[in-house]
Length: 195
Image 1 (cartoon, one colour):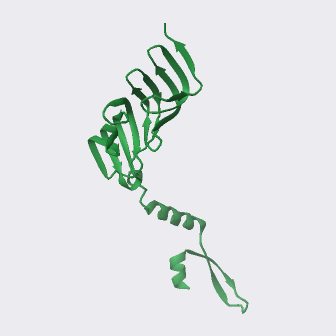
Image 2: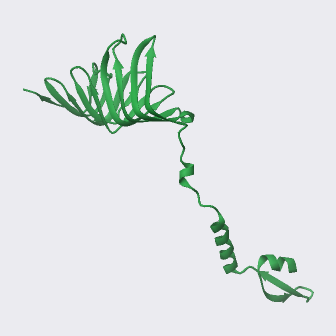
Image 3: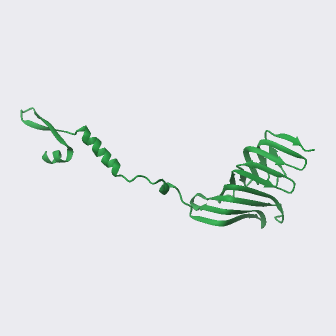
């Protein structure tokens, strides 16, 4: 019992067992418990939140990527910087533009520009963040946070939209369109005719 008293805490009294022999009672003082807990918690290393943040495997300045189908250019992306997260099949993009090509892959049909975004490197879908502009020969589309689905060759957004044409301005909220804006649906739209 002497060994236990040295490890556990304080002897606070004596009592008699059933045979009448004196027995020392060992009680752990609440202050001792609190001190032990504080020392245990206090001795642990605090978690470093920057260590928990996933770091990119690569950071590439003047990044470019492209997609071809049956040997024809589909689109070409150029970004000021890309952070590649290979384990997530993702690249984050800074100040980027995308040239979309016509069906024969020979002519640029539209140019998209955005300050930031992401591309899924597994399926070539991309997402813009912030003000996004798409220009074609005759139209300018302005909105935010576009999603491009490569398998559908369509762009989508739920943000406010402004489409400027030679003869009209169409405003709305939400869009579904082909990147060259040849097929476009603007939801909740309001048309202003130019004179």
